[in-house]
Length: 250
Length: 250
Image 1 (spheres, rainbow over the protein chains, first blue to last red):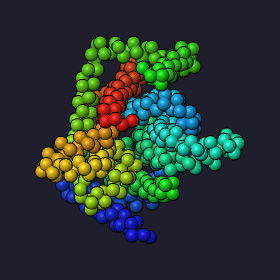
Image 2 (cartoon, chains in turn cyan, purple):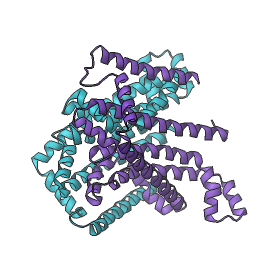
Image 3 (cartoon, each protein chain N blue to C red):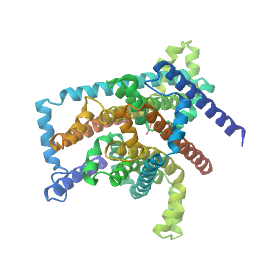
């Protein structure tokens, strides 16, 4: 490990420490009926993770999330490549995609439910519509920004279209595409959880929603903690890969 | 109107016409979705009757409060920590992973802490928006040219005068990017929170109509939200373009 990454790790540890202290302090102020303190929440999460019922919910959410992520990435990449390769169509599409990004997609939830019915397909669809737009936007701009000389080289070498994508376009655009995948990852997670909060009888989102109804603070805090830990851990890993890709590219 | 804008209009109009056609010939049945023309007619009727005015006012007020506080706090905080390296480095992991964390997961907690009033919804909008403002303020301030800062010192401007007269105007394009994101996030946060659980607002009205299978209210309101968020988004994009042109960039 170099000096830089050491200081980065130290920073992260200090930050986690500060957040835990703030959590404890907030607990002291808000009181027992409003929230649970850190130690107890971790212990309760441990207890939950030891039960089969909780794993059932976790696997349900995991499956829905992975399927939604796969769909969002594949479709987002396809849209991004098709539009990005053609300058004028990307000029036409960009504002539309940005506008879609800023629409509160949660309001589209009823439409998704009416179209797919209750259950797994609706969750997956809802996760996908959250994740697909950022992947498409970043891929489009990444492909659009590829140096023309690379494309000319490909043409001189008479590469087949598919070969151009796999051995020229994709490697050249990868760093920027990866940033899009990072954003897509977190939005897909949010979308899947939101999907479960309404039209579902299983999954972490469903657990959260029933816990709100029952005012079961321990469950709310433990599930929130688990989601935050998962999101932060994956995100740190993705940021690490992202930085390495960008460094290699320059 | 540029060529791209004309094509864009054609694409959007074509999509709406296609949807109309699919609804009319029965591919999408009437119970799932009514044709766009009927949505427009119903929306017009709702706007004329004024039955949704209270909900619209509520939502727009809460969005505005969340937006304004996130911009004020975000810019203020950015200016404050800009020069302090230790704090910035400590917060960096938080900023980098922040948007991977599903903020809605905290909504149940906020309801328990603050009750089911306007505060939790405004807080969600604020929490989503504020970090985008901070991050963009910091990157804007990083790019203020040294000459301008020297000029400020030559004229012996105080810290506040320097911020108001030199640094903030010079960082304006970046600030505007943050502001643009803040609008979108404030909308997404507030309306999403209303949709999940609340007693007023457009998000609540949509979920209420959905639970009653009242498509004649639900679809027009979804259209209304899409129109409002797109209009606000386009206004800020236009403003940004004007600002950039005035500075001779792009």
